[in-house]
Amino acid sequence: MASLVRLGNAIGAIGIATLLLAAFGMQFVLGELPCPLCVLQRIALVLCGFGFLLNLRFGVQPLHYGLTILAALYGAMAAGRQVLLHIVPGTGAYGSPLFGLHLYTWSLIVFGGVIVGVAVLMIMGGRPDHDRSDHQAATRFRGIHRFAAWLLIAVTLANALNSFVLCGPVECDSDPAGYWIAKYLP
Image (tube, rainbow, N blue to C red; front, side, top):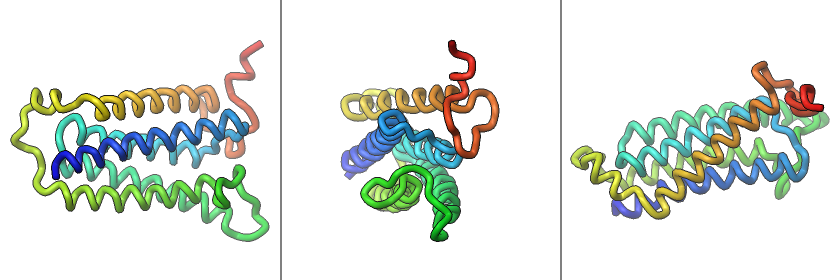
């Protein structure tokens, strides 16, 4: 059962990295710049992913699942706020829909799914891995687990760079029209 829980954590981390890559795709292919609430949702996704990675690297711990759940709740609040901003007919929406729903609505659904998925993994996981040494945990951190870690780290760094290029060292515009750094490029 422990290997199934580790696989579930790897799938969670890879799934979150894939969602962040899809958001990048919509940003760069469709030219839809993320709003400040969108950036907060991306941060929450990254934190959820790192909760899964902590379980992969250091063994399954309630502390790591707690981080994931808190990050998912934070993301659900940001996504819920954005849904509520655009729920009234005639107020408009931010970005184009994907399969009939906007990305902030999908985010709210994903954060709910993360919470449910973590609950299932906690039920399946049994007791925490307190008896494993760091060396034992490191030797099990290879293959898909290592791939999940590097993918999530790369996507996180790309998101950090993207946020700086978009907003700069100041607060992001509520409806960004272009990249902050474009003002300083020839």
